[in-house]
Image (cartoon, rainbow, N blue to C red; front, side, top):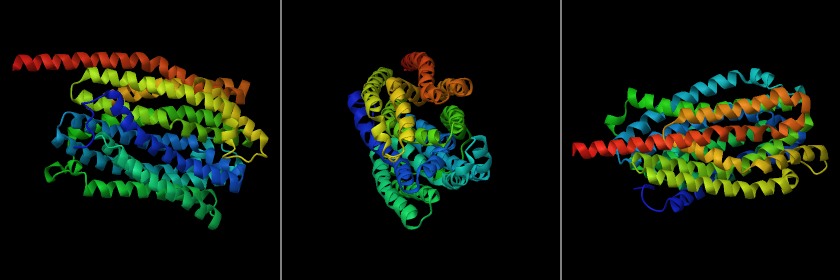
Length: 455
């Protein structure tokens, strides 16, 4: 039996689950950071801007794919916690088929729309061609992204956060090698960085698949499980699509924000890109903690142990806020130094823009500990639509600042856009999470009383 989280100390279980997940997230961000560092240092700031100018739309599309895969894993975690292994296998099979369909549709559709997307983002003409090459290759590799994310999602659902980490670590090393080879040796430019990233993700997905086939027999659908069940498919869509949309809705706000920033010129695009890479890396602990708490909550809700659900959410939130406070200090005082990973020391204006963005984010960084943990906890408990609403609050706040304030305050407004969104998301998700837990607590108690009467 893999990592059952319905017994034992909640804090210890969450931390043990989160640690390999954190390392995996760090390695995953290493993909993008290595791309950016090599591109920025070898090809120059204009090529870095070409890669960065597409980051928000990548988050929109890839976030939808990844969020959907995470959502497909939630019913698996609940069935695992309830020890319903027949149901678990049915969900795994149907989720795999749905993931394959989404992969094909998304890859074909997004590649066809690349040019239009870049025009809507107001990508500057001097970097348009490079941005197109990079984005088209990333979108063509969506099946690789979905393969890894779906398989890692069901592995985490049964408590295994180590296996995805091992394979992702191997792929990160491969990605670094391929980056140098494709960019420096083959002279493929930003297209080489995209090819290296997609190939490496595909390797991690294939390794997950091979290990599941060989080792994780609990996930193997039996002959009677291998058909598309209407109810199960509906459950997966109801759970997965809102989670995908939650990622995408958040990304829409980021796209509006990036479009506004792209109109400020290449210096600010480059500075913003460097800052975004550091931001994504520093967010990895939030994602790891939040995913651990979500899996913990899913399994314990499936087992009917709501007291453990509440304890897990409280302790996870405390860990997230604590990390956020420490990381915020680092961003505030060392943002410019960190930006030099991607930008040459001679490009002072770009470094100043990146440092300003990071410094102002650092003041509010702790709020992400609340937002991420509570949002994923609500998702894990089966209320993905409420997480979508939190994403909607973030989107509204980002759009408000980008559309109304950037034309007046320019880059100063960009540097406060994220913080306004985080606070807005917290104002919604805190009461939403409290209401969700209270509702499910009453539901579990009512179910237990009914079982006693029937007995």
